[in-house]
Amino acid sequence: MNKLLGVSPRHPGLWQDIPASTMTKKAVVDIETMVSHTQGRNELTKISAQLAQLSQQGRWIVLISPPNIGYKQMLASAGVRMDRILLVHAKDEIETLWAMEKALTSGTSSAVITWANSLDARDNRRLQLVAKSAQALGIVIENANAHLPDSAINTQDDRCNQGSLFSSMH
Image (cartoon, rainbow, N blue to C red; front, side, top):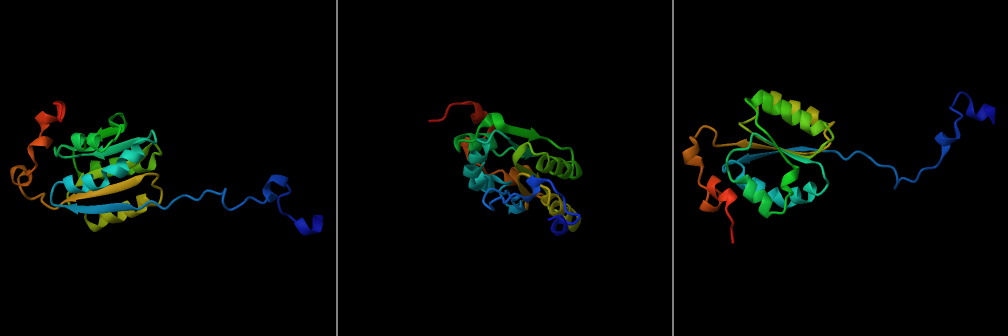
């Protein structure tokens, strides 16, 4: 028997047959980039049901540099636990991407949504590298209308303005 094992480790726990169904593989997490013409309003509406499910896990849903598009009302009406929302306001694009990288790899977030202007090749490559060790859903909403003034972009209905966030809706 010693000749069969050779210099292999002899600890019996190393030779147990573990069924493949009990072995957990790390899911490959991809960071999705969405180009938006509505400052992310439509994109956030599309993923709000998924965010509601993720908020039930007890981990953070991180929103980095969100514009004032009435996201609080959208998320609350979709059933997202608002006590699991973490807002990060970055001063520039570099800090925005750094905050996204840290939130994705920390293990305390279930989703990280970042609003940014258009990303260059270097930033896209950085996000690809972060995706390899990401432990959360990552979404970058690129603002296709960044060159326009806010008044030209802000075509939201009256339900989503800042004043109505704290009033009752029927």
